[in-house]
Each structure stands twice: as C-alpha cells, then as structure tokens.
Amino acid sequence: MKNPARILIVEDESIVAFNLQQRLSQLGYDVPHVAVSGQQSLDMVSQSRPDLVLMDIHIEGAMDGIEVASRLSEGNAVPVIYLTAYSEDSTLERARKTKPYGYLIKPFSERELHATIQMALERRAVEETLIENRRLLQQALDAASLGIMELDATTGAMTINARSATLLSHSDDQKLTLDDFLAGVDARDRDAVAAHIKATLSSLQQFSDEFRITSDQPRDRWIKIDACAVNPQRISGVLQDISERKHVETRLRRLNEELEMRVAERTNELRESLKELETFSFSVAHDLRSPIRAISGLSAVLLEEHRAQLGDDGVQLVARIAAKSTQMGNLIDALLNLSRLSQITPELTEVNLSAIAAEIIEQQMEAEPDRVAHVNIAPDLKARGDAVLVRSVLDNLLRNAWKFCARREVTRIELGREARDGQDVFFVRDNGCGFDMAMADQLFSPFRRLHSEAEFKGTGIGLSIVQRIAARHGGRVWVQAAPDEGATFYFTLSA
Image 1 (cartoon, one colour):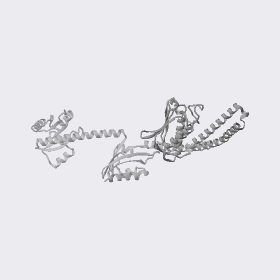
Image 2 (cartoon, one colour; image 1 turned 60 degrees about the horizontal axis):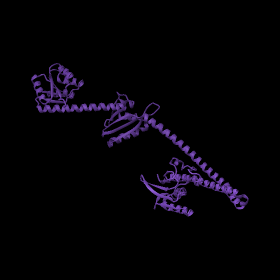
Image 3 (tube, helix red, strand yellow; image 1 turned 90 degrees about the horizontal axis):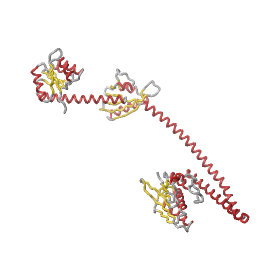
Image 4 (cartoon, one colour; image 1 turned 180 degrees about the horizontal axis):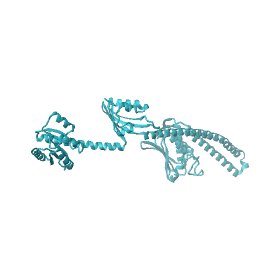
C-alpha cells in the first residue's frame, strides 16, 4: 500500500495551522509538523523531507514565505503551494518567479485545497518521471557517444549539448546558428545537408544523413545526423561520430576493388589457359588419330593377307592390337566430346525424355535381341533443356544401366520422375551389379572406373559427361547404390 503524502504546514497563526493540520489528516495526508518561521521551515524540510509544503507568505522571522520557497527551489526542490490572503500584483509576481505548484487565496474550501494538493502531487510525480527519463536518456547518449541538437527554424538558432559541441568542433560558450552549422559542413556535402533540413521542415518527416565536417586533420571526419521535424519551425535530433566506420568502409571498398581486379586478371589468365588447353587437346587428339588409324588399318591388312603366316598365336596378338587401337580411338573421341561441352551454349526447348529413352532402349534391344529385359519408361516425361545434350545424358545413363545388367537373368531398367522440394528430379534405376557407395565420389571423375575392362567394357568418361551437362543446365547428378543390388542415378536440369 502506498504511504500517504507527507505535508509540511508553514503558518504562524496557530489556530489556522491547527485547523489545517486536522482537515488534512482527515483527508488522509500525513502532517507531522507545523513551522512558524522561515528558518524553522528550512530545518524541518531538511529533516523530514516532506512531499509538499503549504506556505503562508507572511510568517515570523526575517524571511517571508516567498523567500523560503525560493531557497527551497534552489536546494531541496520541494513543491510549494501558497496559502495567503494577499493577492496584490507585486506579491503575485514575486511568487510566480518561484514557480509554485499552486496559489490559494484565503479563505478557501476544503475541496479546493484537496484538489490543489492532488494536482500538485501529480505534477511532481510527472516531473520526477521526466527527470528520471532524461537521466536514462543522457546515460544512453553518453554510452553511445551521441550528441543532441535542436534547431529553431524561425530564428535559425541551434541548441547543442557538450558532446555535440565536441563533435562539431564548436565552443560551448558560443551561440550556434544554422548558418554556422552549415559552414562547418564540408563543401562536398553542404548543399545536400541544407536541402535535407529544408525538406524535413516542409514535410515534417524524419531524415538521416552522413556528412563530412571541415577539419585540419589528414583524414576526413564524418558525422551522422538522425533528426525529425517536431513542427514546421523546429527540428530535433542526435549527432554521432562515424569517422571510424567510414574509414573502414573505404578500406573495404578499396580491398574489394583490388580483389575484383585480381579476380578479373586471374579469370583472364584462366580463360587463356583453357583456350590453350583446348587447342592442345584438339591438336593432340588430331595427331593421335592418324597413328591409331594406321595401327588399326595395318592390323586389318595383316589379318586379311597374312593370316596363314601369322599362325593362331599371331592372329590373336594382331586381333588384340586391333581391339586396343579401336579402344584408344574411342577414348580420344570421348575426350574430345568432354572438352567440347565447355564451348556449347545450351539451347533450351521442351524435351520429351520418354521419347528419347524409348529410342535408346530400342537400339539396345535390337543389338541384343536374345536378352530378356523389362524396361519401364514413365510416359510424358518432359523437361526444359538442350535436346542434344539431354539425349547424351539419357544415352549414357541408359547404356550404363543396360551394360551393368548384362549378367542378370532379367534386365530391369526404369526411367521415372519424383518431386523433391518443388523440383522435378529424374532417375534411371537398374538391377545391375551395383557398387559400394564409399566409391561413389570416383564415378564422375574422367577415366575412373569401378570395374575392370574385362568385366564391363567402356571408356570411363560417360558419367563425367552426364555431370557436366547437368551443371550446364543449372542442375546436378547423384547416385544411390549397393553391391549386387543395382543403382539409381538421379539428375535435375535446373537449379
């Protein structure tokens, strides 16, 4: 429960003082003391710390009530209500200067007294809250190194605190005007700041600006102002030194510019290296093709015209030479196809994956009519991509699936589609030999194979092509498999 307000009565007429004390006690106030002179009232205020003083103007002693109230406002700042029979203009003027919380002319009613006291106590509570809020605000401003400024647009006068004066390199004892403030803004930013202030006054909006101030220091000093128009004649805001942040931003910008230059240089170097590598690859491939063709052709001539002289062992050796030359030719072609992918710009159209897959499987079945195969191709599988490149993806994946199912009694292959996170994911699933997922990272590297040439023939470059084509479309490819349980290759054609 809140304690009752403590009131000190200053009244030299004992009957009036006693009557007041009784009436106030009945109204619920705590009235422990009555003072009859100025000095006694000052002593009692220091000792009992009342919430309010009811002050008669004419009291005993050298000081009257107005002088006592003036002394109280300097030290203890206790709210004072005058209770007096005097209403002359001169007395009222003297009393007004002490900023009293009320002025009651005797005689007054109990209701008037009670209402005046309540209004004074409420005003004092609001003032104390305001003082505390100002203290907390100043504490926050000091912690953030913020300064305060107010502009009276009518007179052009600016009011600033000590921190703002330091930020603006302005003396505390000198008056500051808007013109003085703008004169201290660097010429590079002055017009913009002036325009912002003018626009803020006319539109009654908030504004935030960063500007440099004139300084004899080698580095620019930056100030940030955040302000708003309280009315068409007044702006209130805060100032902050942001020099360090601006200098850091400048250093970062220069570092970024240097980094971009270096990246551009390295990119150009890499582009030139790639061109040289592509030229070298084509040149080597072209130079290798001639001797490989010669070896293959000479092997065919030997087998055709000199089979008898070679004997069975010689025929087998020449046949192996011919097979290896053919394999080498295939590797050279695959390597060239892989290198060309970096030069192809995909031409995106709607591609029917189901139709392309059906053609590829039909070719495989025609090549091996005796194989028992169950192939399930989901109908109407469509995607946006380059028709030639998408065909290469399906060709490599489906031929791989067909190849690795060769030792199964029944070949099972499925082409389908799933929805994952709102994206179409296509897959090719088979019941082939599978592999250990610990080796999955090696699958998409050129010429890395998980099975020997004797087990399953191939160049080892098909999945690398699949991965690059998916990447060129903004997609990716991955796999799930287990030894002797088949494999499922997933791919997307968009990010």
